[in-house]
Length: 381
Image (cartoon, rainbow, N blue to C red; front, side, top):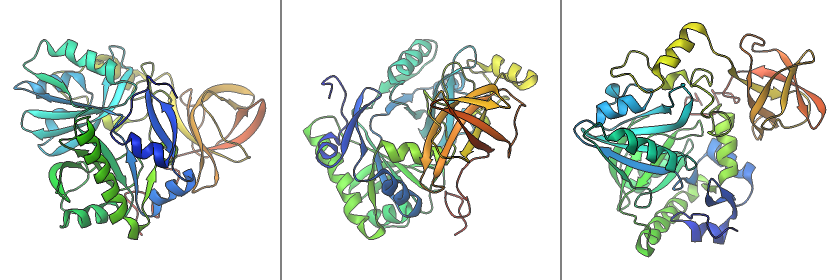
């Protein structure tokens, strides 16, 4: 393993209990036991993920709101204190520099959580544009460990640890809470399609004391969650759960050549905002004139797993490429996300995927790929 790879607070625990791989410049666990087991723990009960490799920036100051309004595509003015929103940071051409979570923790203070690969790029971008505003940007990545607790039993577990009912905190909120003696921001968000929270564990500097504190909290979750069938989950289950939910992954499904409208994450975009954000004019043009490509979902009819950059064909003509694909533990078949020319296919159409020079049939479908009455945060059972 490359010695230059970065390590999270929980590295020693992962090295002892999991299989480590390089990921976005970090040494991260891909699995602990079996990816399908970890995946189904998230769908049926609760799983925990170390997400400390993601970058966390604290942005505060008298003009923090105005600054963030120019930096992100959602409407920051709608974000109340103790609220959170999914949004994107765009380039001048409407391409996605990154997708992120933005939390408003005080009247003039926000926490920006961005993808590991894009941390340095976003840091430079923010600091460049901050010169025109009364704001202060601090990288707190190494001082705040981050753990995602996901699944239908996630909030039951966290309420047990807190010693009180945490159901008062609705989705997309971010509140300072005590979790078994650990001061944390309980962010009611996640990227698996399931209910749960992302925990920002405060006062965990990247030293022995901070690492021990983060590890102790991780083990507290595992011990207290044993009755629910909790599993520690690695990158494999992180990818399969987000893809089953139809959620995009930076570097695969979105990048600086892809706009939020092309990616069909329209909920991250607002048009009636003031001041306008970087990339606004191009998005407005795409809204009025149409996009050059559009994201679709697909489920394999034939055997095989669609993988990134596999060609998609319709009646012998190449119409696009796969951007992400996995074997779905719930459907027990290959699923994927892809980009095609707008208007050439619709839900229910049969297409073909070029898998290692063999054409395999797939069906265009909507996401999430699972039955939302049985799985996911909106389940009815």
